[in-house]
Amino acid sequence: MTADRIARLKITLDDVKPQVLRRIEVPFTIRLDRLHEVLQAALGWTNSHLYELRAQDVGWGIPDPGFGNGPLDARKARLIDV
Image 1 (cartoon, one colour):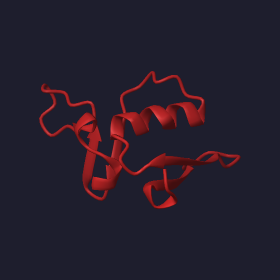
Image 2 (cartoon, rainbow, N blue to C red):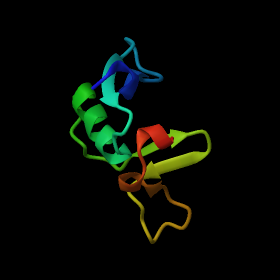
Image 3 (tube, rainbow, N blue to C red):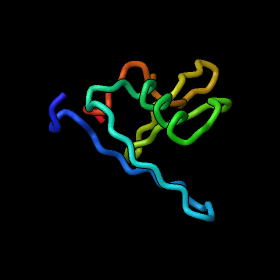
């Protein structure tokens, strides 16, 4: 992949002492559900909770038909589109 197709992301957790920071590189074309998996691995988490990735006023995650205004389907969105 060329550098212009790679997103370099800086992840900082809020309200955590000491500061937790990770830098990752992913393709701009990564689906948001896959980005969630990368974040889980980078932070050493076990994927044991629901998630929502947000950009401005829009959220993506696992849709729940029983929850009216839940997140959009993360399997149908790519980082480049966000």
